[in-house]
Image 1 (cartoon, rainbow, N blue to C red):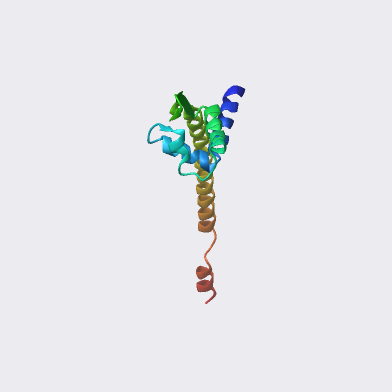
Image 2 (cartoon, rainbow, N blue to C red):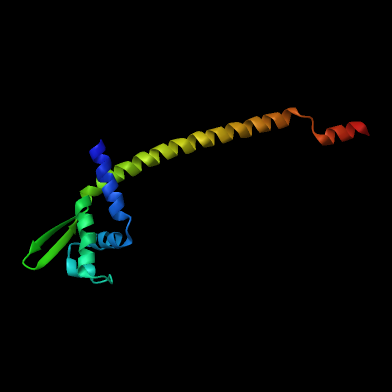
Length: 129
């Protein structure tokens, strides 16, 4: 369990940076060389490689070097843990919202019931005439 949380922390940490999210989005279209990935970002290659390293450490990206070219590809299976976590959170919040809605409806019915038991102001006025 602790290992799963550690992996989840790494994934969310990796995706917290806009540069790394941009890399992941580009890799959704298919594998690319580090040079192709770095091209849209205005930073030195060593700085960019740190982002690649973080993505690799989190398991989101795999890379392979062939000669002088390092090619990266997305590892979508790494997102399964994050997807499971989101589904658990969604189920929890949907259940809470369902309970809240039931409570609000109960209060509304109680208010309507209490209002029906009270004599209306117009009937008091008519009796006073």
